[in-house]
Length: 410
Image (cartoon, rainbow, N blue to C red):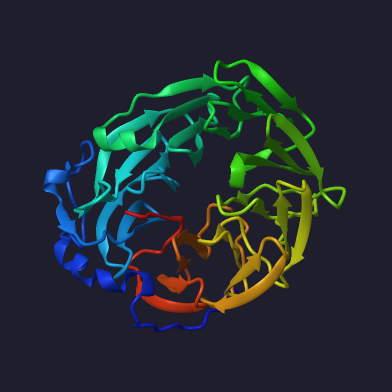
């Protein structure tokens, strides 16, 4: 049974308090806002604002909503059947939606041209990358990398090109189709997973010309990716992680025989990545109470006891590289990645239990600059947390039960 305590907050979000004027310049706070389809709207159609407020995107059973990050008002509501996943595109403006027909692109309607901030109605664009079983979306070094689980095709484009319409795409092909992930580094090297329907044993690294330069197949059940300070790439395994850095792949073994790290969060501000940690191979659904910290410089793995469980949507990073975990005790736990110590625990929602099916809603965290946004499906609410102050600074009630959560900076 889920238990929740009610939260009523009315104080403004500290980071966004100067943006009240923005709400007056935004229209369409309900229903389907903006054009029904089309490429991203032009800057000439937008209102110029002192600073563009972040926008939050949530999925619900049957659609997607775009919310104002300060008031939590609905700016756009887009019916979309099926279980849809959402990720930032990497340009501070667009969101990639994984749908039954492929990767679709949603324009949240906020952006900056370097000196001027703009805000307008969001719009579902006609930009689409057709594929079967769209999988991981990775953002790195100004590029967006899409991985198709159904075909093994990797699509890479400049994130900023989405503002112009359908971008020019560079494609690569994995050796076999599988549930995988890829990341392109600044020097053009491509790190991608190996696998097929039966197994996923490791990773391979290709140079900018597509020539193999490194390979490691000591990573059963390979899953997930995080990039740390200095472009160190960490890939999870059922027995630890693989770290690719400086042209070399290093295996860091789990301290237990089975120690699965399948979901991670990285930060350019830290050499340490944050990962989950599961050690019961036979559990129908393990509810772990330890997280993993992987130091990409020392090649060491540390475990931290939280005293509470969490889910795969509980991991995030703060503005200074803090490791954040949303526990089932309802608190956002802040961890110093260098000392592996919990420095604070911020109460946000009531206690909850992870559902057996991974597609089902559960409290979720998404970080935008100094603010962590947390949804609570049990009460149809969303909360803003000042990470450094350790306080809930704003809350809103939603008209749909939120599932996935993401956002853009504007």
